[in-house]
Image (cartoon, rainbow, N blue to C red; front, side):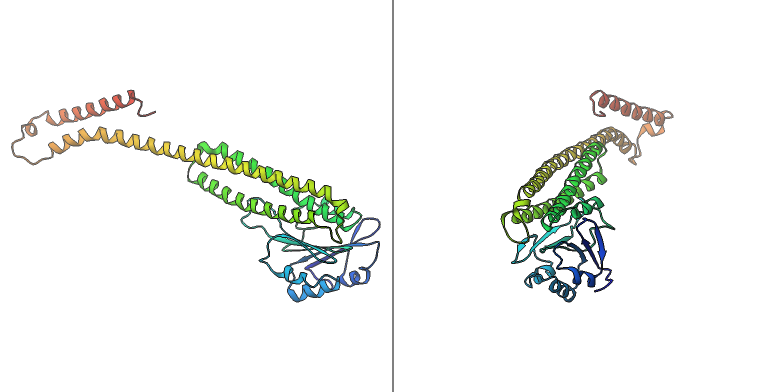
Length: 324
């Protein structure tokens, strides 16, 4: 697995500065008491995963959970390790949220996912990676990572609110495009809420169990604060869902009003043209004895009468407020 592009290994020494190392170097130094390691892997195949999990002395029972994509998010505890599966929320408008697997060993933190979180091609700030490296143990590194992921989710919640605020301001220009945006927001918000629930379930499970290599004495209170942030985001999402429901109700009323306005105009036009159509129908009949047909001023007189009827009806409907 040397120089594997799907694997990044960092060694964090006593000076708390990360240095990238090769797989062979990791195997030689993995038992150093003063060093910590941070490994990122891109969804390895089962044979490859089994090989390096065995190399880091991971519990063999974890293998099935790592490769099974149908396992729901949660925290799983073994004799010498802890495994977390939780969604990776990159953007609140994503229809699908990829999952990451976090494995905590005595001196090694491992992340399996579809992309590297650090230091390149990442939506997370590099300061989060440096903050993880400054921690004194794996428990601190895990908490820093979880705290950064939850902070990012909180930022996405604020982005969601701003998007809904803009949607509300655009409501007066409502039409087919606005309705589509509203439906898209409802769908994306539902996926975002499911991902938040999965994170909450995972961290709550982590909070309740005392097992190595997690030191609950150092992580318990900070973790409760992180869970409180998730619960705040969940309540925030609930309020945004209520706003979207109200917006949808308002849009329905606006569309109904526009439909009624069009029907009102069509009714006015129909009322105006009905007497005109009657006159046209009368003089369109092919009877032999119709004296007006032979009168010199019959045609302009009928046109004048039809114009007078149209103007009179328009004035009447305008006074009644049908065009407002």
